[in-house]
Every structure is written in C-alpha cells, then in structure tokens.
Image (cartoon, rainbow, N blue to C red; front, side):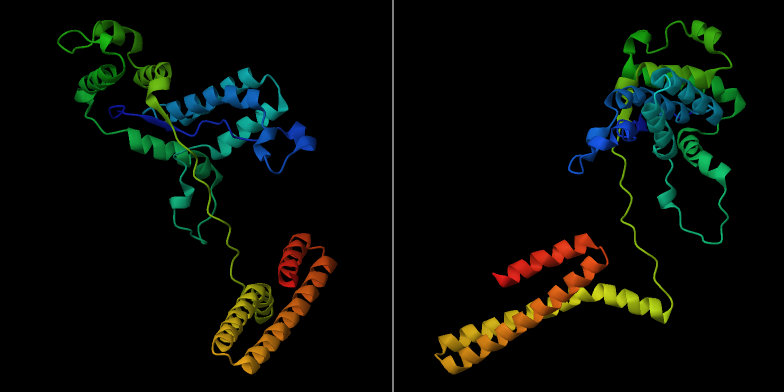
Length: 299
C-alpha cells in the first residue's frame, strides 16, 4: 500500500548522452554542443514517466521497464543517437540507485540482477507502507483525498470527500497502482521535482604496494614538492636581500642577489630537463605546463 504522495523526484534525461554522429564537430570548450537536442528533449518525457512508475507503490519493475522501452521506441523511431541516450539514461539516471551510499565490500560477489533492481527496490521501500487488509480501501481513499486537495480540489465535494468515489472503484478496482501512476503522470508538471544528478567523486587510484611501484609514485609526486621548496627558498632569499638593502648592507644584498640568481638558474635547468623528458614521453600536457613555468622564471 502506498504512502500519501507528496512528490516524485527525477533527473530527467536531457543530458543523457552526446550525438555520436557529430564527433567530427566536437568542441572541447563546449562538449554538450554535440547533444542530440531533439532526441534529448523528447526522451525527457520517457525518463520522467519511468521514474513516476518506479515511485508508485505496487508497480512492478517489469511494468516500468516495458513502459520506458515503449516510450523511447516511439520517440526515437530507430535513431541511433536517441537510442544511445535512452540506454545511458536507463543505466545511470535513477535517483534511487544510490550505489555510492553503500559501503564497499571487496568480498561481495557482483550480482547483475540485484544491480538492475537496486533503484527500483529503494524507490518502492520509500513509497510503500504495510496496511492491514481491512484498511486498504480507506487508506487508498485517504491518499486520493490528499492528492486531490493539493493538485485538483475540484475533485472533492464541499465536505472534502471524493466525488463519484463509486465510479473510481468501478474503474480501478484491483488496479490501484495503475490509478496512482495515471494520476502522477497526468499532473507530472506539478508533482515531479527535477533534480540535478550528483557528480561522482574524482577518481583516486589505489595505493601501490611494492617498493618499486612506491618509488615510481613518489617520483611522480615529487615535482610539486620541488617547486614548493624552490619558491620557499627564493622567497626567503629575496626577503633577506630587501632587509639588507634597507639596512644599507649592500655587500650582503649583492651576495643574496647572487644566491637568488644561482637558485633561479638551477631551477630553470631542472624544469628544462623535465620538459625534455615530457616531450620524449609524448606527455604534451605536462610539457606545456613546464614551458609556462619556464617562461615565467625567464621574465
């Protein structure tokens, strides 16, 4: 038995994928420009109605999946990009599929069937409640009254009771989940809350165990430490030089200037060697970063 409906949440599927036929015109400064806008806009309806179905107590996972497939088939009409968007949205567009909230268990065997039904199961757990058999009918009518009070008060009489309740039961007896799915779909513009899909946390590579791998990791991470050490030492030398000038100890100021120049030359030599190594390894992003730093130091 469902709880009183307050809202339905959905990510929609306006940004479910890129137009794979437009990759020749891909613009890295505007990656979403390659979206199949027509397909994405229309598919949004399918995604929202899929989430309505999953968040209606008593609707089966198969019913929701079949309805989504029927909707996307009708919208896409065989269009490859549209079908890709529909597939991507089905895999990663469920607001109740909160896998990231579950603790990682390396000994737990992956269950594809459980993964498919995780979002559906979580949604049903959130919207359903246990009611004794003899209280089901009053509970359904109460939920209907709550719904109509908020979204269509004209369905209630002056006493706040549902008009033509006998006709409602005549049409929907034994099909209560379908009744609420139809109502939620009809009033989806009012009841569905479109939320922004949370972005996954940045990837953190696993720690390496062997001494050799640890050494490699340390060498990769050493450059920022070397840069920090250089900047700290240079800042201190320049500070001492300015103090020496202020104290009119010009010999010391000249000596400190020479030390700063030597430190700068040593750092330039190191950076140029790193740049050469990056180019040899075809690491052009790193080479570009090093080139920029060299240019700043040579000013």
